[in-house]
Amino acid sequence: QVRLVESGGGLVQPGGSLRLSCAASGFTLDTYSIGWFRQAPGKEREGISCMNSFDSSAYYTDSVKGRFTISRDNAKNTVYLQMNSLKPEDTAVYYCAAEKQPMCVMDRSNMDYWGKGTLVTVSS
Image 1 (cartoon, rainbow, N blue to C red):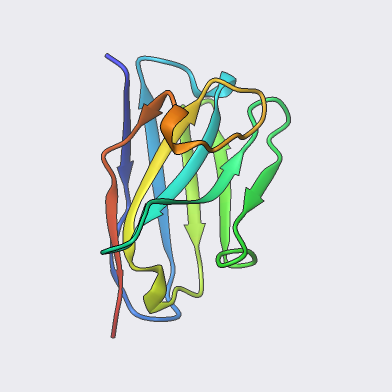
Image 2 (cartoon, helix red, strand yellow; image 1 turned 60 degrees about the vertical axis):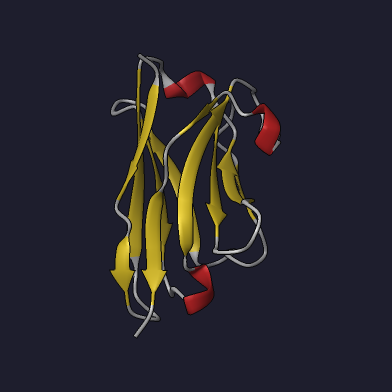
C-alpha cells in the first residue's frame, strides 16, 4: 500500500522551530521529486518547498526562504522540512506530496501521492 505519512507538527511559539517528517511506504522516494505544501484556514493550498529527484536541488517560496530547509534521507525513505524562526503566519496544515518527475513541477492537481497532513500552530 502506497502511503505518505507526515509527522512532527504541533504548537510552537513565534521564533521557535519544528522539524516535519514525511515517511513513504509502498514506493521508494529517490525517484520522486518531493514537495511540501501548506494550507492555512480559509486559504488555498500553496507549495512552499520542493526537492528534485535527479540532483536534490531545493526550491523555496519567498515567504519561507532562509527559514525552512528541505532534505531527504533515501535510506530511511523519508523527507524532512526543518522550520526555523516560525511566525504566526506559518500556521497551517502541512502536506508532503510526491511526483514522479526528475525535477519539481509542483502542480497540485498532478502530484502522484499525498500525505494527510500535519497541523502546525505558531502562537504565543
